[in-house]
Length: 414
Image (cartoon, rainbow, N blue to C red):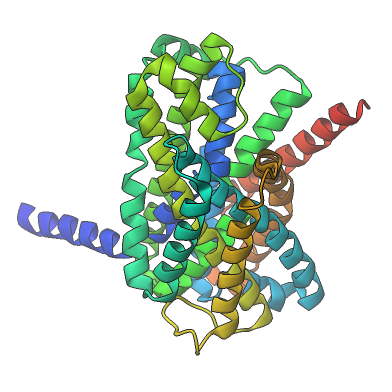
């Protein structure tokens, strides 16, 4: 009687491994250069006090990503494609403009992360950035969906460097437990801005488009939907765990010594005398891996969004001649992001950090469209949202709107 159960168990594991990828990859990409900079600043400027927002953010991330995955499996269409069909071309064009402009800022941040991660080893950005641009372009243009997904999944493994760096920093685990169990939140523009930045970088608008497009391109069957959902849950947990270790690493070292930073590279350099060269090197290597990873996916996500919305051919499995707009846009975004980073003395930090806050401000708008779609019984059938999902998702929208309004009011002195 036990043998069939064992076979069923291993069959489920194999099915999960076959389906897994879109959720884990999408979540991990969000720990990109801008995200690592935001988490580093959270730890360096606020200590362990910015760990608690990651807990409700993880729950919200699971809910939001699950809706994207479910829409992709049930409808077989990307998010921007569904928005165009349901809400019309005009609204879709406005939405595209907002997503593309936000993503351009994020793409610039990724190439800035590549440059800064290796500049601490005295390697010029005029060598590293062009090399990175060529690498990510060849990876997608010359690869297939299966081969590209394998590379991305391997890249996810290297985020363990931040966990190792966290233990090397010797944090105060008792203080961490107290800060999560009994959070203390000062109502200031700086703290509110950081919370919005944390939410914006953990649940970025582009993620919903990329995840759904990946689900569609992978052709995940409805009968395997539960494995796609598990893929999302695992990815959401991993990304939050890595983010927490980045925060606590900087809190245990930089915050304790009163060190102020503006980028993830600043954090890597500052860690060297405080936590040792190995912690610093691990932090820097993690930044390089994350930046290359995201520099591949963010332009890809943007190309998916635009091409789906305009009805153009798209997909990594297609040849350049079969999807010229898709690959042309992907190429243009890489050239733009890498080219801007190479401009001498350009202030990159404002672009990197502000892009994360813009993500937080734009997210409610994307969530409203998603909620309308996932509650449409004609579109989703029996797979419409449950009441609990709606409560958490609408609650996330409401909290983000309130935080944004209060934050802007404090900045303007109202």
